[in-house]
Image (cartoon, rainbow, N blue to C red; front, side, top):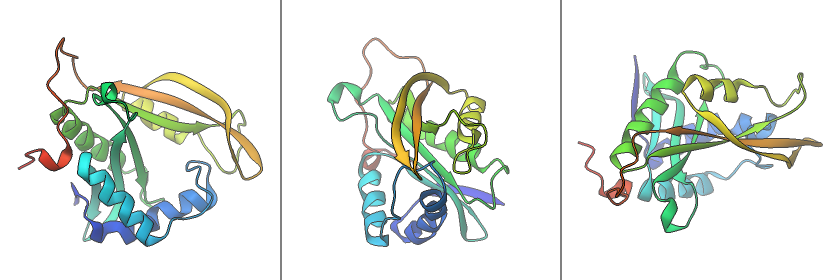
Amino acid sequence: MITIRLATIDDAAECLAIYTPYVEGTAISFEYAVPSIDDFRSRMDKTLTEYPYLVAVKEGKVLGYAYAGPFHTRAAFKHAAEVSIYIDRNHRGLGIGKRLYAALEQILQMQHVFTACACIATTDLTDDPYLTGDSVRFHEAMDYHRVGEHRRCGFKFGRWYHVIWMEKELGQRPENPEPFIPFFALDTK
């Protein structure tokens, strides 16, 4: 049985273990070096002050995680959030990503976020050893739509990559929305 729950700093080592192959062997992450455990914990802690950070767990083992963050730092962008997801490479295709995103999007709606944005690496190559189209297909299956592209803006593994922006409307935008509610102030009970 897979459960989705709020991540804690104690999950950092398992989340970092999931993230490491994405840094070392793919262009999914544009980081060149795997962050230290202290840096990763700090990232998680910073995220949790304003946004949700969730993990999927089976029998005590973290199989994936998803989190949100600011789409942009300006105040007018508070009703939009950037979302990210990483699934253990041995547990993809089991519906974990769909469950994580569904839970993440539900919390974002409670925070008065109306747009979820995903920044996804892409390539023109059909047989790139570092990048497949899986992330784009996953987001399309989750009702995200392509809204923009930056060509050849990321360089990793000796080649150029593009990024596309995909977004999903999480709900009707009211004429005068309620203020954004930081995650720490949200009543999730």
